[in-house]
Each structure stands twice: as structure tokens, then as C-alpha cells.
Length: 281
Image (cartoon, rainbow, N blue to C red; front, top):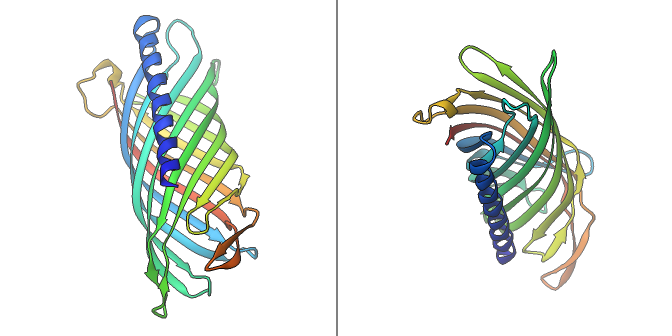
């Protein structure tokens, strides 16, 4: 399963690099409205799972760090109101695991997350008394979730497990550019709807399909006009919230220790609050 995850990461990186160089070439020859940006930051991550009665089975919480490369075409003075953006993000972090084993005995452990996110967004700016950007996009979020082996509250051993997630989704959002004496602000409020969700579980050798639900996103970005003075190290600061929501997956039958077992992913929620520090080139 590691080979599958690595293959997806490699192919996505190749596609992102091709898109970057193609766009960069266009930016140099035809349109001065393209901006390249590099962001680094930290996010507070939370993952929760619930049983069929809505009782919480586990919580994972902790920090993750990330690096994002972005290229976008903003609205320019030639009255071209189209917006294009491509962003590739890599992230990693070890978070606290607070859950229970198959016998409902409490378990504490650590979970390592490594993954990447690729987004393509297009839109159009509507001008008038209220300026608003109407945005739509498509993205993929793929991560590896490695829950470490541990002991339960009674001292019994609990095996670790590795899960590989691949989520493909649509986005719809509205963006509101704001002007202030000290900075430019940008508020974006949106919805995220997965259309394909795959979860590979190594220990049981099954692929699960959690049922997709709509979730929300919101961000606010402070931009300090450093595209006019690239010598400054800090171009922007962005605060954001994003999420995923999944109903439980259909059960699959696997064989463990020569006995058939039913495997399914419970209802799951992901919530992330983060801050990104950007530099514009």
C-alpha cells in the first residue's frame, strides 16, 4: 500500500510541476497578472470517529506543519476579471490518539500523518457596489494515517494500523476583496463536497468507501502589497478553517487470524484551524 500512496504522490507532483511551468511560461510572455507564492505554516488538527448511536469512539488532536506552493492569476488593470489558481501543499505531523480497542477498553497512542493536497480553482470577479469573486474548483487530498502500536488501560497490547486515504472533491466559494490603509484583505467562505473517497486498510487488506458529506471552509488573508517590493520576506498572513465530513462506510469482509471479520470506517469528522505565512515572488 505504501507503493500505491507513493505512486499517487509522484504522479500528482509531476502534474503539478507541468501545470506550474506551463502557467509560469504564460505569465512571462502574455500576462503580468500571475503571482507565485510560497507559504509555510502550522495547523491544529482534529479527527473524530463516532459509532452508530453518535457516541464518540476516538479523538486525534495535535499540530501539523505544512509547505504550500501556489501560482495564481489575479484580476488586473486590463479589466480581465477571470481568476485562476493552482496550489500544491505537503503536510506532516504526529498527533495524540485517544480511543479504545475492539473490547471498548481505553487506549492512548500517537498517530503520524503525512500527505499532500492539490487544488485547482477558477473564478470570475463581479464588480459593482459590492465586489465578489465567484469561485469553483476541484482538488485531491491524500494522506497516510499510521496509528502506533500501544497498550490499553489494562496493560494489554494493541496493534498499530496503517490507513491510506484518497479524497477527490469539488469546491464552491465566494471571495470578498477588501481594501485597508495597511493591507489588502481577502475573505473567502466556501463549501467542499467529496465525490470519491477511498480508504485502504493494511491490516485487513480491504478498501473502504466512507460516504461523502458536504463541509465548510473559511479563510481571511492579510496581504501587504509585497508584489511591489519583493525584498520583504513576509508578503501575507492567512488564518483558515477547513473540514471534511463522512458517514460510515459499507462493511467489507476480511480474514484475520483465519477468522472472517467485518470491517468498516465509522462516521468521521476532520477539522483544521491553521495559519500560513506567505512570500510572493
